[in-house]
Image (cartoon, rainbow, N blue to C red):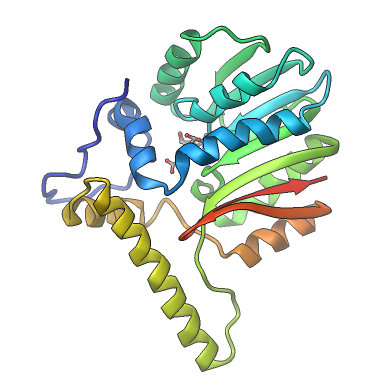
Length: 254
Ligand code: GEK
């Protein structure tokens, strides 16, 4: 069982940029479940979607697997016909925790966890890629090449399941009325998300200090930007299958 997240509960004189270190890995399952609306529902359905698209003799990748909750859901749903499930993360503490969780279960399909940068990994032919809230941590100018790499490694009919926090605005904005409406819409989603965190026991201080820590490291795109990037890579169909406040998950089909 994960420890309760109280990392931002005391006032910090200097708020460092958020990093996926050992302290975060220790509390991560609790942190993510109390921070992302619908996370358990998404995890369950990621397993179902992966099962639907997994093809024989291909690899299934979970990019930025963290402590492996989504990896485990895919492992639960996919049987032996897929070659292997590979979880990748560049945080060693996350990978260590992930391996502990993975070892607690018996899997029909082999599961391998590697500490690696997802931008420089030699991918095998794959039928399912998962990026569950990971793309938003890459530098914006490196996101297109990451999506291109995923697309190139996918077999025809393969999918990318992409979940992200998003900004409810599109650029460029020419009309001031539209800009005002978009900012009202974005503010509403941000407020609803904060209410969700507050109802899950986070104080205003925790919410605001975590937001400051994430400011430079998690830069969110609009849904239009995601669609454009995926289309440019070559994906033929893009289906948003989950959305709650400013969080969504989509399936992009090659
Ligand atoms: C879940 N998917 O529970 N290479 C490898 N890993 C990376 C990289 C990179 N370049 N950049 C960031 N990460 C999980 C949750 S968390 C999302 C994913 C969140 C890793 C980073 O170390 C972290 O573990 C993960 O991406 C993002 O379904 O905390 O909001």
